[in-house]
Amino acid sequence: RKEVEQDPGPFNVPEGATVAFNCTYSNSASQSFFWYRQDCRKEPKLLMSVYSSGNEDGRFTAQLNRASQYISLLIRDSKLSDSATYLCVVWMDSSYKLIFGSGTRLLVRP
Amino acid sequence: NAGVTQTPKFRVLKTGQSMTLLCAQDMNHEYMYWYRQDPGMGLRLIHYSVGEGTTAKGEVPDGYNVSRLKKQNFLLGLESAAPSQTSVYFCASKERRGIIGEKLFFGSGTQLSVL
Image 1 (spheres, rainbow over the protein chains, first blue to last red):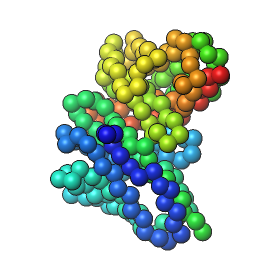
Image 2 (cartoon, rainbow over the protein chains, first blue to last red):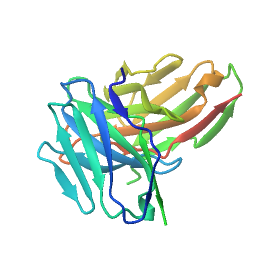
Image 3 (cartoon, one colour):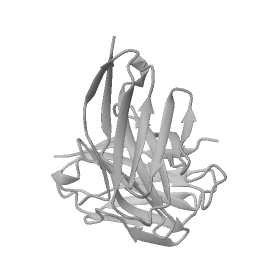
Image 4 (cartoon, chains in turn orange, green):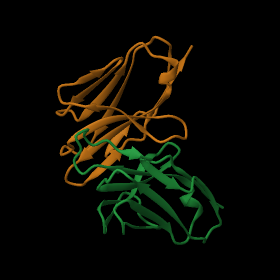
């Protein structure tokens, strides 16, 4: 079983739609969680960290469920510019490693 | 302040050739990482370093070697390139324990093709 799993998609949604992605992780000792965004053939960029209490940044909301070992990303009012691959990332202090999921592709159509 | 710089950006090798990818960061970061990315596979960790003079294996270390002789540089070597090593390689660095959390700073990637 992969340490971090995501639905690869693609999620094909119209502009203005709300879309949600989930990500599950296997190691209960995982300590920090993040969503990165990656545009085609470019380096990943940090979208937002995910806090235990949940957090929001504009149209983006991230949630963490430690009991069920998953994190989620909600995008409201989708824009064409949101089209990208969204990577779920997990960090463990004990291993110094950031582990990436394989990504969920989002396509926002006019 | 250039951040993380990878060289080269593109390279084509023949099977059996060797090469070294260079990653340089000017942010005084302790941790550095090499990832490879293949279609549908996400980023997989090859090797990483938690400080000058130290390296460790990641998920897919076979066929690669690394060195961290200076804190700012992390080198990835392919001793005998194979077609299976055709990929996009990303270098990244982060603070030991950052005020901004565990954010990774990425280089722009190296597209490597092995024929």
